Length: 75
Image (spheres, rainbow, N blue to C red):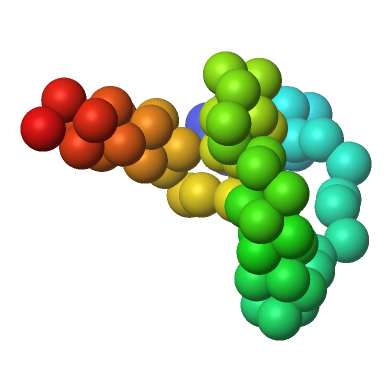
């Protein structure tokens, strides 16, 4: 009986862990990411609030990048 509870708990953890994941996204190479970012930046991508939001996809922690930029503007 104890083994059954352990197995059921393990299956529940696996089921809930995979259910929350979205579909796999094709990963870009580092070169493609840098080229996309460079194009985005040189075309004025972050000149608007919407651009800042969209540009956050290039960063691991986008809220920190925006906060650092805001701190820089205050200087």
